[in-house]
Image 1 (cartoon, rainbow, N blue to C red):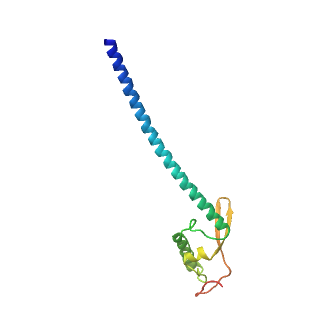
Image 2: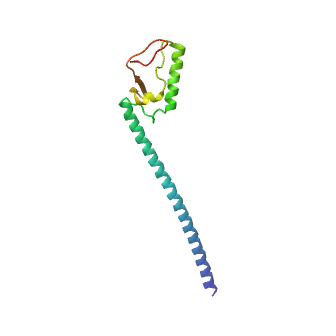
Length: 137
């Protein structure tokens, strides 16, 4: 009888250990599923961002500036810095249009790549020189 009771206790211990390991495995599986789902979501986001970057570069190659590459704030800061530099060192020149929206809608740009550097240059039709310089015609 003692042997049967010992055998029964060992089987209960084995069952409890198996249940515990199964529960741990189930928890790990759920956690792994959550992690994989998050990585899948992040991968989709990166894929969309890569597509936007590609489209923006293609637009730039066609001479169009993209909000994805230069935010309105960044472009406005760039224009203000150029104007400040001109005011200090080249008073006969000025930035004719300081509104960044103009450059997204109407301006044409040239792009040049040298090694890992990309140069984005504004294509202009002419310069107006003087203290009241307005947009070039």
